[in-house]
Image (cartoon, rainbow over all chains, first blue to last red; front, side):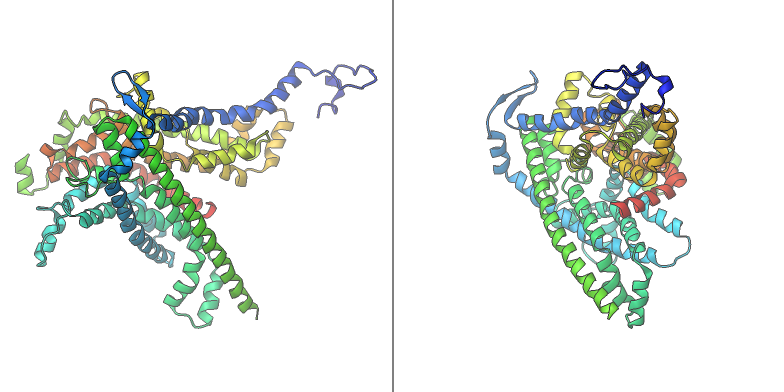
Length: 335
Length: 235
């Protein structure tokens, strides 16, 4: 680029090495521009991430080995004491149990419902955009607002749901006392928020399925149900795994709904619905023990990584299995 | 208050007024804070993500590959991992109770950078950039006149997502802010407190806090839908 326009350049000095012409100021600026602009463009992200992401991660590790003094705002090293405390704390294990229980109660029905809704939306219906927007509507409502409404509906004495149960002759369910009912109630809030969102993701995957697959199946005599189970489900499997992974990561960090489930926000009198995130909050901003809270944060992180790796492992096997199945199918077609 | 509740007669305006006028709820402050925080966070996220995404997608520089992988890796880090030191940091700066403490951590997200990188990579022909460069555009002018216009649809979606997420964000604002200067979810959470549990009041508060986002949704929900569906196909 620099040699094609000789008239803008200083004449080349005739040295034995034939060095390129010394650059003009403008050219030098241009080179600097090309060289350093990209770094300049990504710098804001990295600066912000360094301050609010990277530094806290490492500092969490440091704090988790310290006994934090709130008054002096510094810590003294105590080794693994905080981890030992957390791992021996019954409350922690209860919160771990609750987190997984709520996660299962929310993810499984959610996936089934989302798939069903997506399949409905995938049909040739009128007012497509209207239905899609309607399905997404719960997603924009703040979880705190959702939790306020649902925890009222799930009220033990005067709640809407219990009065309905009484009306049809069933006895009340103690949503705020018993373990599983409280998990069901919280899972309901999570489902309310995310089912439509996931349905749209699955719908996108369904629309990407080549229509001739359905035609071929129909010609082979497959009914609606058979087509759904033998064509749609295998085809959207990778997207489904994506949905499962993202909902796992989100599900393990659930805080808003259990926090807002009763007036105290401590996760219930017997920690019935205390999740790990809530446990972290209770250690940090109720007990004001930052060391223990930091230890909980690291344990939660490790759990998420472990489950992420597990997911990845299962995903690989699934996708491999899927690929095998589809090649088999295509062989059949060519025969 | 109890009369309204027992009577069961719908009087939304009275309930809304009770919520708005209650000093503990601090409604107007919460509303303005939420608007400021969500707007600042979304604008900044869109601008900085587009800039970084453009660099990752279209510019050649040493270490771009590993750096992009690092960005993706940071997406897996849960927010709650850094929440304790972040609080200590804000305390040192004297920013607790200040909405700046909520804005700063949201200035740019790894998701935003990744999202914009993906989009720009697919939708912006490299020839356009080269043409602008040959015509003598500086790097930043090329970005401004070629990169940014091409990224506009994805930027709009990112804006919506970030706005909704920021508007509904609860845990961190709840920790770092107080009721003197809350965001809407933080101020809403007080309706759950003992002396307040009153169905109609709670519903009025919920409605008041949700209406702004519902309005946004009415106008831009279509784009939000297509954003989610596009992201699903790419992701």
